[in-house]
Length: 366
Image (cartoon, rainbow, N blue to C red):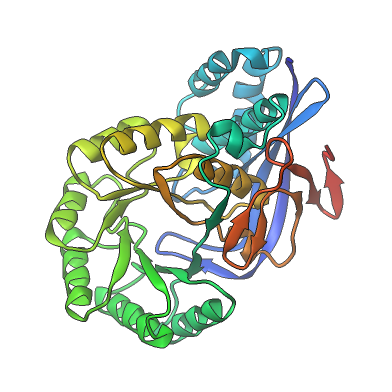
C-alpha cells in the first residue's frame, strides 16, 4: 500500500478559558491537520504551533510538510515503514511538530493495515488511562477556585502551573490550591522553566517543610540548564521531571547519564512523533526511569495518537491529555472517549478518527 497523497488544512477551536503558563497564554487552539492517503485509507495527524517551545508556527508547519516532507514520502510503500520513518526524520532539521503530525498519520495507516487499534499495534499494555487536569497560572484565589471546580467535575490529579512572576507568589498559589482542595487531589507542579535552580530548591524545600506532598515538579529550570536541573533533583525529596530539556533520544540519554531528573515527560510534538518517542521511552525504561506522556493544546486527533502511544507502553505511568476538554465545542468525530478523567479506546482500527470540523465542514471522512 503506497502513499498516494499528503494534504494539510488548518483548524481553529476556541477554549472555554485561557490556558496560561510561564511561557504563553492560549485562547484559541490552532492546528495543522494532516491527511495521508494510502490506497483507500486515510491516516490522521496533527501539529499545533508552539513558538515558545518547538519554534514552529502554522506557516512553518505547513511549509515543512508540503515542501520538504511530502515530496519525499509520496510513492513510498508502507511495507517499508522503517525506511519511511528514516526519510521523514532526515528530510529536514528540527520541525518536530510537523514531523510528528506526519508520523502519527503513518502509524494510523500501519495499524489500519494490520486491522488493529494503534495502542494494540504498538504493544497494547493497557486499555484505559487517567488524565490530569491543568490549573492555569492566575491569582492564588482564581487557581483555588479552578482546582475546586475540576475536583467537583471528577478529576483527582491536578497539574498546577507556576513560574509566572515571583517565587513567593508561586508558593502562595500552591499552598492555596492545596488548602482549597483539602488533600483530595494528587498535585503536580509545572514551572515551565520559570525558576532558577536556587529558586526551585527554595520553593520545593519550603513546600516540603509545609507538609505538601507533591507527586512531582516538572521542568523547574531553563531547558538548557541541565546542571541546574541536576542540582534541583539532588537537593530535594520531591521527584523532578524533565520536559523541555528532552526533545530527542540524545537529550534523554544526556539527562539520564547525568542523573539530572527522576522522570521524563515525552511529548510527540517535541520528539517528532511516535517513532522517536518509543526510543526515548526505551532509553528511560532501561535506566529505570518512568515516563509521562504530555501534550500541547491539541485537538482529539493529536491527543488520541499520544494516548494510544502511552497506553501501549508499561513504562509510561502518567498522562496529561486534558486539552480536548478545554475546547468550547468538540471538533473531532471518533478517537478516544472521555468519562471525566478516564480515557478509553474504541475497537476501531488505527486511531479511530472519522472526521474533523473545519469552519463548520467535516473534512476527510474515513
